[in-house]
Image 1 (cartoon, rainbow, N blue to C red):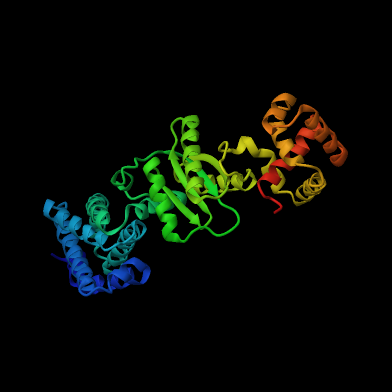
Image 2 (tube, rainbow, N blue to C red; image 1 turned 180 degrees about the vertical axis):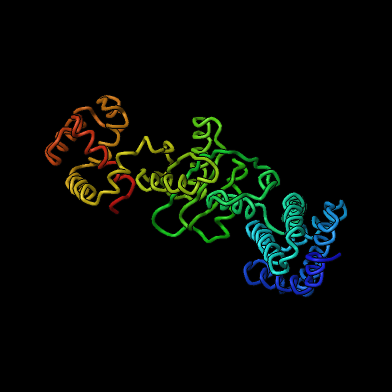
Length: 388
């Protein structure tokens, strides 16, 4: 062994200690694990062993052996069993890649160009094989060290943050994977929800109905991601989960949904969240709104002047008897008098009286072109709790 390989071999102990220091500094989960007696020493032993094998094999141009991969798998399983999150597991592998290149750069002299090229050529295929072996063990260990609900939320978080998902993670959770997802946001406005432990219990109950990634992104907002093959079928499934969530919480909620591709789901979730903020707050949601259902309300929400104007219309409607409820039913039944009266359990003449009262207060007929546009948007925003 000579040249670059000899220099790397001589620096193995130094590089391994520095690598462990970086892991503990950059990854809180590793720092927590290292508080247990013997864990830091184990990390250092592994860092030394891995670097020695990389130098030996690269110098010979040989791949990792089955025994090498088994060691990587065992170490990954050990870390997974210690409660290290999937994000932290991925982060450590990324740090190892960066540190390896740094170590090669520091050791390389002006006369080791050929060996640097050899080493750089050896790394991609063998590095990937080593990472895959480590991750297989890591996911196996996680089944013992991390509750199923938490692992499901970690997958949801990775998807929503447009991060690379650890290979095999969806399959280890029996969730499957997809290129496209429908994201459903369930928003519970008002008083704080139950504590975190209870919210995790709710996710556990919902996972029995729909085995899909989901996460509480804040105390009052649940996000679920449905693999999206048939949009209409998926919306029905998502609506069922939303209704069950509302029942478990025992509180009215507002919902919104949007679909998008993996690695662009942060923007998709943002749209679904904005939809939920202009959707009606209901004890049992009647539908799962998407952009085409509330595009007018979304536009209004971005224009303060229009928002204030419609708020004035809403104030005028407050002086009448159940006028917002009446308009909501009227538009939901396509302005059919008899069906609207039946839904409200009132006589058609009572409905006519209310519609006249609306015209007097708002200055427009509910069934006119202008009335549908203005009053429809006003009612939607009132029901969404926009001005509470």
